[in-house]
Amino acid sequence: MVDAVTPILEEYSAYTDAQMRALFEKRKSVGHLYDMMKYHLGWLDENFRECRAPRGKSLRSTMCLLACEAVCNDYRKALPAAAAVELLHNFTLIHDDIEDGDEKRRHRDTLWKLWGVPQAINTGDAMDIVANLSLLELEGTVSPEMMVSIMRLFNETVIELCEGQYMDMEFQERDDVSVDEYIKMVSGKTAALIEASTAIGAMVATEDQSIIGRFKAFGRKIGIAFQIRDDILGIWGNPENTGKSAKNDIRNKKKSLPVLYAMEASPERDELKRIYGKEHLTDGDIARVFDILTRAGALEFAQKEAKRYKDEAMSQFEGLKLYKAPMDKLNAIGLFLVERDY
Image (cartoon, rainbow, N blue to C red):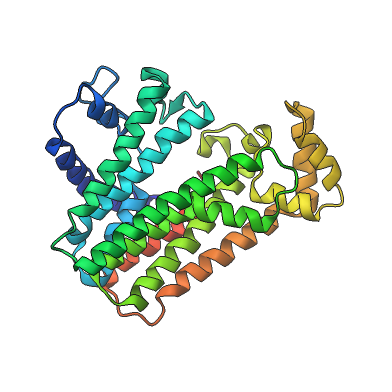
């Protein structure tokens, strides 16, 4: 699965990178503002010298390009949108690192760790605006009415991301979070941007609302399945594959889907809530939580939910006449998101 997807991501991320680099070249230099963005994107080192640092997979921007190509057989029309999606995603990561106090991302110091919280906030905010400016380069490619619809969806997505992040942080202070609330949270924090990626890719290619709606639903449902898979790996993943310690999410008292399910369904839910209420968990606490989750069938529940959302996502394209090669690539990425082991 990974070997099949990696070449796709490498090919299409190169297209998106070139588009983003062209965007930055148009901006007038302001100290190291844009250099800090390039550092975060993995193009520069901390001394602002060219480098090839570890970077993200560009999943969302690639899905945007493939959605467009699947409908009209020309990914190039969606390049401004793909760059916008990638910049928006990275803007949220810069702010997430600040909010979570994370000092490392992709094995390098985070932006705030190197240049301070104020500069990191400003850099993230500026990246968000550059993302919107990138979208405006679709003018002339789509109708004025579609341009407005794309801009509206893009900015509604930013609000959904903020709402989802708010809920995620609020959940850490509560012991009564429901599974339904969790789905609403991940629909904003994780699925909204994947939904926007595939929807906007289709919007660039066609004005057929039925087709756009299918790509939109695909992105939303595959995004939820993607997050559930992430939750599974956070507890049951192999550290050699995930790069994180075993049961990492339990140690961090993360209220992921398996935990919330057990808090609702397990006969031992009161003990589980009591342990999660502690300031710090011991190794014994972690082992006990793992035992409670296992007996509650939390893994099986999460796997079933991930499969349900994945199947609903994949069914969206039934009956549509789409270009096979890009559609095969998009489906491969969709399956990778919910079947990966890291």
